[in-house]
Amino acid sequence: MEKRAPYATRHEDTRGRFHQEADSATRTPFQRDRDRIIHSTAFRRLKQKTQVFVAHEGDHFRTRLTHSLEVAQISRTIARILGLDEDLAETLALSHDLGHPPFGHAGEDQLDACMAPYQGFDHNAQSLRIVTRLERRYPQFPGLNLTWESLEGLVKHNGPLTGPDTPVTSLPAAFRDFPQLETLELDQFAGPEAQVAALSDDIAYNNHDIDDGIAAGLFTVADLMELPLVGDVFRGVRVEYPEIDDRMVSYEAVRRLIGLWINDLVEETRRRIARVKPGSAAEVRALGEPLIAFSDAMEAPQRALRVFLYARMYKHYRVNRMRSKAKRVLAYLFEVFLNEPETLPPPWSGMAMPLETPQRARIVCDYVAGMTDSFALEEHRRLFDTRALT
Image (cartoon, rainbow, N blue to C red; front, side):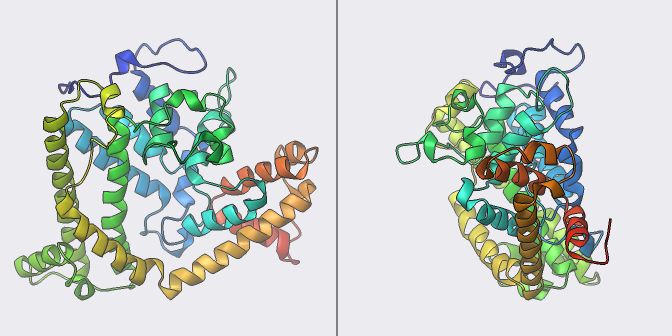
């Protein structure tokens, strides 16, 4: 076993679960949390949920599932280097996208618009709703009954939720519906493993979107050459291997870029550790600033890459067409199910039909958000194609 740092989260000191259970004889609490995520229905559905491209556009583009696996791999690597709990970091990486609806951010934007009269939709809050309420796998309790540390990291992986200008009452409804929400120390940063998972997400999607964008023909290797850091790495690969094609250049350059991002994060985090000398995970949460971070020198290359990907990939006309179609599909589904809850399948119809509109909207939102891309398209066909009678 790797030596743990004093600021690592210790599974022996877990604050436990909100529903009492006997400990596992073979797994730590965080290993058990990870396994519950992997076996959940919501996790399996990620295999056909959009990352950037709709799942049916090609077998080789990343989906939410493959993205989550890549984030988990990066998280474990960084956690091992820093002496953190690898299993908790992996758990948080695997669970961070569970609440995403079909069709990626286009789907989230549309569901939020549909739910605007009913307190909105937020995919992070939906992740909490899934693991505490919607998953039904155990007879003793709703949800997955994850440890306090996993729930805290899931909720706060992007930073504190409350502060002087953000009271609990301002949070999305799916957060506020969790009775134990305020026990998760919402005004503090998450533990170090959650911070690692959050930045591993940035490393994964920034660099792998380069690979998917080139594979999709949205831009070329030559288009990347003027970007700071990214262009240097691509030029270096081209000089070192002049005979390989653009796809192989992309594979090698992205591999090197991921290593550069990881090394920068580790070096900057070690500088911060040396400065603040945290003695426990609780001290990390109370610092008032992140412990896990990239250096200031990495900010300009990251910003330039994001601007490039936004213009050349996320706002490409092909992606915009997909976004437009996806929004219409979800808007039509939501409208029909809200106004005609008898068209929902059981048990959803039984839950929705007796409710007033605001409460029914949340049930409809849960149903639609849980869909895969392909299932949403098939539901749309069944409801709106007059030739489809089943």
